Length: 387
Image (cartoon, rainbow, N blue to C red; front, side, top):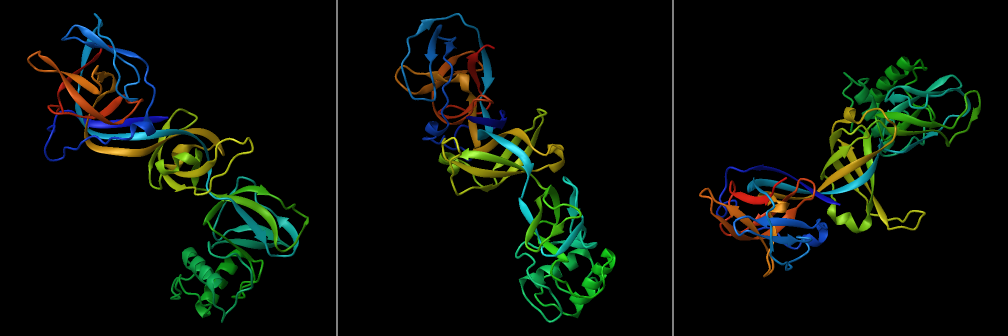
């Protein structure tokens, strides 16, 4: 479904000259909607033209006598935004498995729904905490000590700097080397966690996760039960709210990263968002329907999304924008018997005349359409059916 929103200043701007642009053509096939048959009255001529699907192409219609009342609307200059309406699901971004590397007995587990930050103990094995550290490049796969180097060491250094344990040591967050500064910062972290201050990071004492803060989704371990290295103990997500849309693959080119979005929440309230990613792999669901791609959207105001873990939402994505264009209400369009469209302009002197127009970007929610035509200017009055 397509819709367009318009914000316009009806009082300024000539029909031609600087800033004037011709309406773009060839978009009606993509955004065309069947418009209900309407009778538009030509008040000046005492006749009416039947307009059926005014965006589907020119057609002819008989003139009929009509006493239907009319009103006036402004030709406006401004921005039009074409939108596609989609169903989505509000949830959280990310899907992470916490892989344990320690062996022994689980003595404490996190609560489902609990939020844990970098530097906190996520769970305990044999009474010893396993600390959450941020690292998106590699998981923990070896013990770390002074003299070593690598991507995992760089992640450890970055985490220690981020947590404030490296202050005054000169440790760089981009350093891949485990030196004395790393050992000292690590001792400070171990002290806060109640661990032996060894300045070394044994395998199983920490887990690297690609988020500085995670939200626990499921816990697969059992407190008091055994746990083995390389087993999944927790699944988690980030705390970053996200809307996921399953979009028909044929419409992939209509949506791109950075597109503006309006999200309608279950409460009926709306909040803004931005397209974070557009999937490149199309999949069919188990029902065998059309192939779909996944579009991920980040709400701009995270708090506005509420506290529901998961909820259906309506998403309106801006797919095209026409700036500094003239527009009229859709119901101002008249289908000409000779083909094409026109609007009836009402002059200040009361004289009315038909002005042929070309149509461009249009909507079916705000009810405006981009138009261009000789003699058409912002601020003019056009005839529309009376409401």
